[in-house]
Length: 297
Image 1 (cartoon, rainbow, N blue to C red):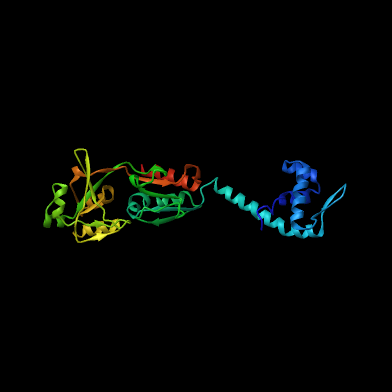
Image 2: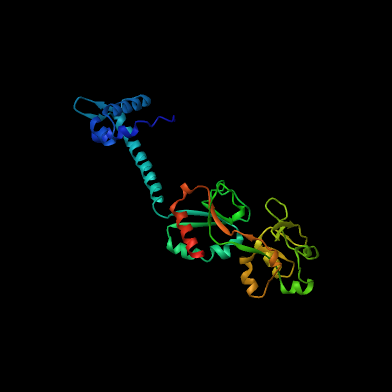
C-alpha cells in the first residue's frame, strides 16, 4: 500500500452517506470541487468507478457498494481508536510503568501503593525493580525514581523527598569485635561491604571535610550489587556498609545497626521521580506524581 492510497476515503464515505457532493463538502468544511477531486483521485487509484453521478443524484456503483461495505467498518474502528486514545488524555487510566530501585520501595512505594490503587482503580501499576541507572525511554517506562544527582540533565525531575544524609552503619556485634572508626582513613583497618555498580566498578565511599569532598576505596570480604543484601550483611555483622540514612533508620531504632563517622558524611538532594518531557505527562503519571508528593512530603 502506498502512503496516499487512502486519500479521499473520508470524502467518499461522506458523499455516499449524503448522496450529494455539496452536502458532503458542507459537512467536511471544504468546497464541492475539493470533494469531487478527492473522490476521483481515489477512483483512479482503485481502477474503477465507485460512484455513479447524475445531474440529480450520486449513488455507489456495484464496485462502490462492495468497497464501502469493507471500508466503512474499518474507518469506524480507526475513529474508535482515536476516541479511546483521546479518553486516556482526560482521566487517569491505563498502564503506569515505573522503574524503581529496590532501596526506594520501603520508604517511597510501599507506604502509598495501596491507597493510590484505591484512589485510581483504572490505573494499572507496573513496578520494575532495577538498581541500575536504566534508560527509561528505551525501556518503555513512564517514569523512574532515583537519587537526584544520578538523573540526566535533560530529564524533568520532581522531588519526592527532601535532602538527606548518607550513613556508614554496622552491627553492635561488629563494633564490639572491631571497634569504631574515628576518621574515614580508619576504614582501611575495617571490613567494609563493597557495592558493585552496573559499570562493574566498585563504589568508592564519599566523604566531606572542611568543605572538601573526597572518596576512598574500601576493602572487605563481601561484595554485593544490591542494596538490601548489603544492609542484611551489615546486620549479620559481616562488615560496615555505606547506605542512605533514611533506609536504615528503622533498623538503627531497633538497635540492630549503629551509625559511625556522621560528621564526615555528605548529603544527597534526595529521591526524585523523573521522566523525559513535561509535554508528555499523561494523566496517570500526573496523578501518581501529585499523590506521591502529597503523601511523602
